[in-house]
Image 1 (cartoon, rainbow, N blue to C red):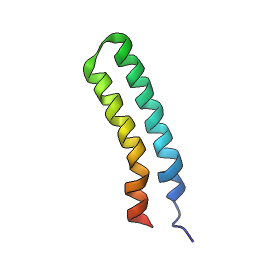
Image 2: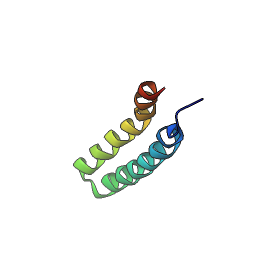
Image 3: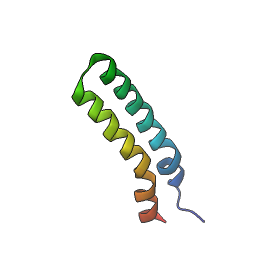
Image 4: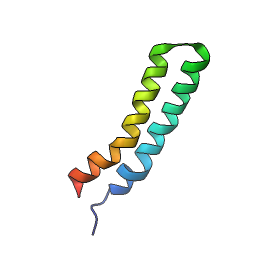
Length: 59
């Protein structure tokens, strides 16, 4: 049986981080704001890698 909370780390948090990263990427592109664009890209990469790191530690 999986540990309670794995759904949060595998499905909910990455979606939230991905949503905000897409908003930052769009906003940074339209405003030509390089730090905001970089933050959005970094947040998107973290949202993609986050479940693999956390779930390998929990399970």
